[in-house]
Image (cartoon, rainbow, N blue to C red; front, side):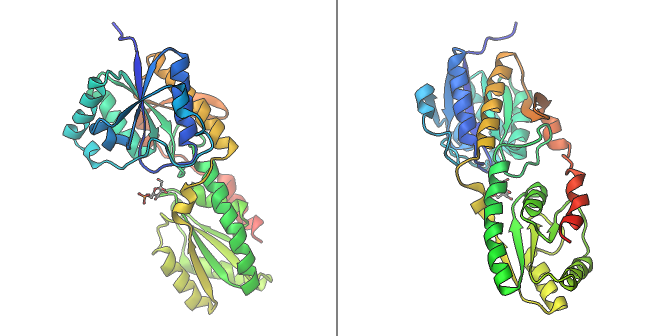
Length: 326
Ligand code: F6P
C-alpha cells in the first residue's frame, strides 16, 4: 500500500540561480496549503548528510520572492557520487520523517536524486534551477531569464565603451557546456559573433568575418563567447584575433555577476508554478521526475531524461545571427 505523505523536505543544490527563493516559497506555502509539514534543508546535500534541518511554516518564507541566491544556501557535494554518501543522506531524511524530497538544482543535483529515488523509498522530485538552461524537459530553467538580462545589461554598457574606442570586445558568459546563455545574450545584445560549444567554429573564419564587417564600415565589435567553447580559451582567441587583424581587443569575463541579483518577473512566476507542481506531484505519488514547462504546459519528465537528453538550441538563432549582424 502506498504510504501517505506527511512531511516533505526541500533543498537547493549546485549553482544558485535567481528565482530559487521564489521556488522555495511556493513549495513551502503549497505544502502548508495541503496540510503537509515541511522541512528546509540547509546547504544542499552536504547539509542533508549533516542533518541541517529547519522546520518551516508559511511565515518562514516571507519577503524572499525578490531575493537572489538561496535562503537555504547550497553546495556541491562529492559524497553524492558514492552509495555510502547517498545512504547517509537517505538515513538523515528518514530519521527526520521526510517521505518526499524536492531538489531545486541542475543536472548534477538531479543525478544524485535519481540514484536516491532508486535506492530508497523516499520520493524525489526535481525543480530545474540553473542559469545554464541545459536541462531537458523544460523550455526554461529557473534563473536563466534573470541571468540573460543581467548579462545583457553588461553588454549594453560594454557596447558604449567599445564604440568609443573602436575596439573588439570579447565577452565571456557562463553556461558550463551549453551555449544557451551566450546565444540568447548575443542575439539580444546585437553581438557581431557568437562562439558556443554546440557549433564548431574555425578561428580563421572568425577573423575573416571580422575583416568583412570592418570593410562594411563597422568600427567596433562585440563577440560573445560561451565559457564552454571548444576553441582554445577566450583569452587565446582574443590574442590570436589581435595578432591576425592587427587590432586592439579587450576581454571581459562576466563570471558570477550573472548568477546574482533579484529575479525577473518571469523567473519568479516560473519558479512559483514549478514549486507548486512539485508539491502536487509528490501528493499524486510521483517519484524520480522533474517538473518543467514546455510551450506553457506543465510536464513531468523522468529524471534520467533531464540529463541524458540534450536540449537543442532553437535554429533560428543560428540562422538569423549573420543577417542581424550585417
Ligand atoms: O551551473 C551554473 C554555473 O554558474 C555555470 O554556468 C558555471 O560553469 C558554474 O556554475 C560555476 O560554478 P562555481 O560557482 O562552482 O564556480
